[in-house]
Amino acid sequence: MTSRTRWWWVRHAPVRSTGGRIYGNSDPLADVNDPPTYEALARFLPKDALLVTSHLQRTHQTANAIREAGLELPDPHIEEDLAEQSFGDWQGRKRDDVYAELPAKHTFWLTPANSRAPGGESFVDLMTRTTAVIDRLTAAHEDRDIIAVTHGGTIRAAIGHALGLDPEAALTCQIDNCSVTRIDRFGPTESHPDGAWAIFHINQIPTMDSVLAPDPTAMLASVQR
Image 1 (cartoon, one colour):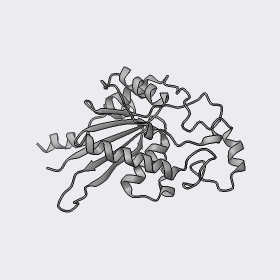
Image 2 (image 1 turned 180 degrees about the horizontal axis):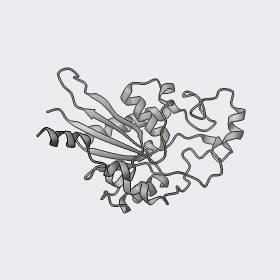
Image 3 (image 1 turned 30 degrees about the horizontal axis):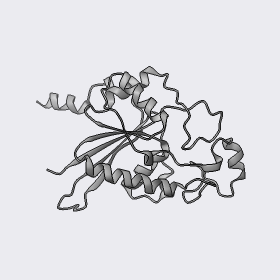
């Protein structure tokens, strides 16, 4: 039987304390005061998973809120290369002010995928470092569930890696706070000797209504029996 490593990507809780300023890979606090959201995540996410976060406190706060809502999680495996894109000298400045100065703009992100802020990195750089972590952890924890509480840019990079997208296309993926993106890695088979990625859902926001709803597949099986 082929191996299957399941990645459950969770974007951190909202950051409301920056007053419209770019925060990138700086370290502001998140707002985790939303108990129903974390209870739904705790019911939706798998037990006995490896927990991975970046080094930034908003990912730790989010993971702790899920833990406190009832999902038993181990101490996080911290990966600094899963942090958000660095916007260098723009961090701490008003987003609208920076956007007005940019010669090349992006509809869904701050800048095009190949553009670097002064003292920062591009989204292509972010994809490169994210991909290296994904491949390493997938090999080291084959056939496990991995819950990765990270950032919007990081999750876009993971989707781009799995689908083989051009970085510019990866930036069009919408990733909301506290959403879950599920991407599985299947091991080698005769038809796919290098293995294969499968996307199960992108930007899914669990709610208590959805996680408590009956499984229609299970209901159908029960009726057929």
